[in-house]
Amino acid sequence: MSELQIALIAAGSAILGSAVAGFFAWKAGHRQAAAAETAGQAQAAALMSTVQATLDEQRRARTEELQRQACAELLSAGLGYQINSTVENGARVLQAAAAVEVACPQDITRPALAYGQAVSAFVQNRSNGPQPDAEVQAVIDARGQFLSAVRRVLNGT
Image (spheres, rainbow, N blue to C red):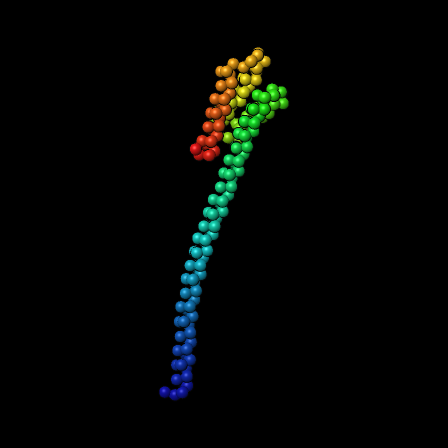
C-alpha cells in the first residue's frame, strides 16, 4: 500500500470518526436541551402555582379584614346609637349594616341585621319612657348572636 492510500484511509477514518462523534454529541445536546426545557417548564409551573397561592391568600386576608372592619363598625355604630340617638348615629347604623350586608356572607348578615333592628327598636321605644328589661335583653342577645356568627365565620371557631 502506498503512502497516499494510507494517508487517504487515515484521513477518511478521521473524518468518519469526527462525523460519528459529532452526531452523538449533537444527539446528546438535544437530549440535554429537551431535559432542560422540561425542567424549566416544571419550575415555571411551580413558581406560577406559588404566586397564585400567595395572591389567593392575600385576597382572602383582605376580604376577611374588610369583613372584620364592617362588623366592628356596626357594633360601634349600634352602641353609639344606643347612647346618643341622633339622626347621624342612626344613619351610621344603617351605613354599617349595609357594609356588613355587602362585605359579609349571609351567616353574618342575618344576625347583623337582627342586631341593627334590635338597636333601632331600643332607640325608638326609649322615647316612651324607661326601657323594659326585655328590650335591653333583646339588644344584648342580638349582639351576642352577631358576635358569635362573626367569630364562627371569620375566626373558624
